Length: 344
Image: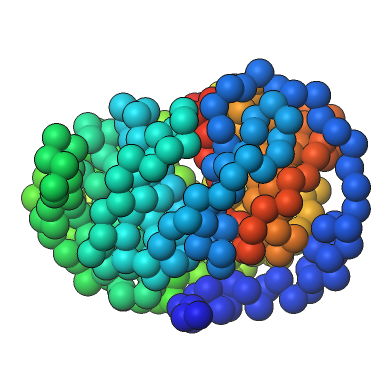
């Protein structure tokens, strides 16, 4: 199995949590009251090359769906009709029905799709090639069954492009470059780079505020989140550093347009950040190396992948109590469901 230097370094951050993760995997938790949800929950098992399909009412694994090697991230098309899974080492994309959990199609010959984002206007699918150091922009033409994606532009993005974000106007895409500790901005109208600037150590996920004005960057190589003003500026401006916890990694908006969560993988915590003050207003204890997160439509059921414990963890945001843990596959990463709070 091949790993990029960034993934190897991030995995090393888990050494201090290995004992905790082992005990968390062996600890029973009380059963949860079923939340109001009907669509299946998808969990990507990166090192098993498959997807766990979870029953949203009983929180039990229903089945596994094989994918290409190393499925890390998934994204719902803006029309909410398709869940797209990026299989990095499999050089392929798996398209799923988000309601029935059936495979719609598999598109092969896509080099190293690690992270992905659709533009809101559904014109472009942008893919980060983590190990191949490029960002690809594909024209999206779903009516063409034989060739739904056409490569329009490939940008060199050394070193190790990780996570992507696209503004609400479908005009720019931002990409974090983990191993060079940089942030890249690409103009989707002219298909040219706008700027590239240095940031903190090992940037991973990025979150663009609903007004497109500020970009938050999670620093997995540190214990903080950097906030950059990007809206309307020729160059980004660092406005604040927010201390969260070791291994700040992945964002999930709370859905109220006022708060965003960030998982701190090495610290085994999740920080709640105010988008008004850019300060941490709450901290949740999150076992097993918390990674990607999802929030159900009740606004209080948080799910996150416990990367080192091989589990999906379900938490009540109001009581901060763990409701349930579901055993899934090796190195669970992305998690998603159609019955979700808004991601802004």
